[in-house]
Every structure is written in structure tokens, then in C-alpha cells.
Amino acid sequence: MRRLIQISIILACVWTLLPSKANAQDVGIKTNILYDAALSPNLGVEIGLAPRWTLDISGNINAWTVNGHKWKHWLAQPEARYWFCERFQGHFIALHALGGQFNVGNIGGLKDFLGNKFSTLENSRYQGWGVGGGIAYGYAWVLGKHWNLEAEIGVGYVYAKYDRYPCANCGTKLESDKSHNYFGPTKAALNFVYLF
Image 1: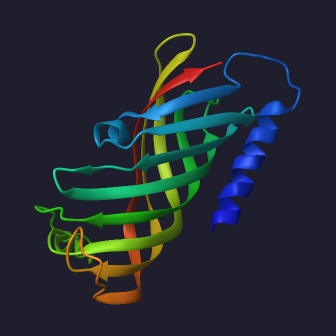
Image 2: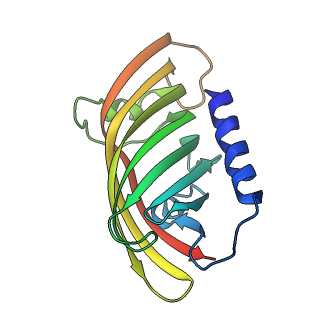
């Protein structure tokens, strides 16, 4: 998994270094406002590949424990996008992959959703990794020559492997090397985008 993420990042960096003409709307730098509000700093880069195709690579990290609530994670999410009209504006559909690690616990008030027992996060801590993929739909509004606002929602599948602990700061494992299959929302974004 780490090797796949490293290769994706290297390919994106090499792609941006290749000589190309500098037209407007060839590359976008973005941040997901929803992740920012959840104290998960994030950054994305979207590269134009063809008149209607782009490659988006985004990642986020949350390394904090706030008021005893642990929601630590990192996530990388590469995505191929097809734009219905012209890239970086209007409707698009996308295929995305995702992968990352998590250390989550002591979070109350969550309800079980689509067969996933999120309510157990109140009295247990889960530490592990996950990989998956999905499909998404989005729309980009042009705000100016270099600025866009973009909304996107996606659904898909995630396979997670984890260890379970009795509380947010305990070191004694209750369960080891467990796995979980998740089907449901895999992406929610409200991106503020700078194009150049």
C-alpha cells in the first residue's frame, strides 16, 4: 500500500515537471473546506491530461487528540476525472482510490450507519489501515479567472484491517488483526481551487 502511494506521488511530481505550454487551467491546487473544518489539513493537486480528463491527487492528515477525542489519521486519494464539457468547470464523474492509516477512539454521539458500528467508537479505540475505491459525481463553479468552488460526493468500498483497544489511551489489545468491509460514502468535498 505504501509503495502504491509513493509511486503515485512520484508520478504526479514527474508529470508536473514535464515541459508543457503554460495555458490557464492546466493545473489546480485545492483544499477541501469540509476536512479543514474537521481539523484535518489537506492539499490536492489536479493536473489536466486531455481536454476533458484530469488527474486529482489529494491527501489529508489529522495528528491531534482534542479534548480526549482521538481522530488521528492520514489519507491519500488519487482520482481520474471525466468532465462533461470542459475540464475544471461544470459537471464531472470520477473514479477514485484511497488508502491510509487511522487511530480513532473516545468519540461519542455517532450512530450506526449502513451496517457499520460507529457507536463503538465511544468506548473503544481502533488502530489500523484501510484501502478502497469508488465512484463520484461533482460540479465546479467558476468564480474568476483563477478561482473555482467545487463540490463532490462519492460512494464505494473500503477494506480495513485493525486492532481494537478498550479506551483511547489504553495499550492492552482486546482484538488483534481484525478486518472490516465497508460500503458507503467514500468522498465528500467542498474544494476551494486555485487554477494556473
